[in-house]
Length: 368
Image (cartoon, rainbow, N blue to C red; front, side):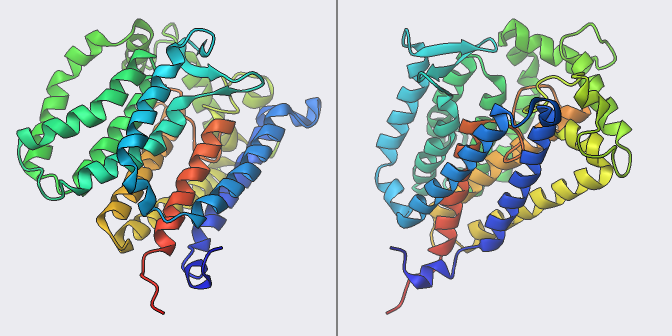
């Protein structure tokens, strides 16, 4: 059982925020899957069940002192790498949407990289804790690059560029929070810009096409551009107040691709307009702000770094997904947290929030 003093420290405002985003998302998924014609769809049922399971997982996570994860950081890292390698086991790994990033568990498919995000953050935070304020030279960053680079390379090999970018942002955010010097940060940023043409050459053909499409948005012949155009039409046609729930034409006539997942924000924009989109953005701002507040008041460096990693993960996914639907970011298939359909993605997000709440409620030592 959790001590009553700890329960009082739980940020219930953060819980309410994710519940509100989820409820909006469930309504949007029902619209995107045409429940008015099809009845209660499988996606709506799965999302509801996943959220309920997520709440139970969060409750279990709150029972465990988060510092326990730090004691098993090496084991967590090794298991995470093994999970990424499991997709190559014959009969277990599964190719879906051109990427070998799924595991076939019979009735459901599981994407290991989703849970590995959490495992990596928990282990990487301990790795960085011992290097706090000791990241002032290139030599200091070599171990950090190796530690963070291994899972990124494995995910790129699948290939899954979107998830790999999420990991890159997690590594950068947590490393910066560990005391990375601004000089090294500037040099790294400059090196990254210079190396982009080289990185481009090593990307898979379909990934290069996505970059080409992003750089040439007016060319509908490039894969993905037609869908982004339809997404922008949907968002723009929503105007201020939207066309109304279940009344979006781009949605109902299936002009939007994977509208219940990748382009769910376009469904929202068409049916609830600028006001609906602004409300969701405000909720996401509150969501990220509350987590950063917890990172600031954490009782130890490890807890702060874990929250920074989780916040970085969510912030990039939110920015990338919404930006993608508006044509200001490349199409990568990154889902919108708590809003997009996806059982494994939702469960992972709930686990992440559970860890943040755990760190927040244990921000002070109990005095008897």
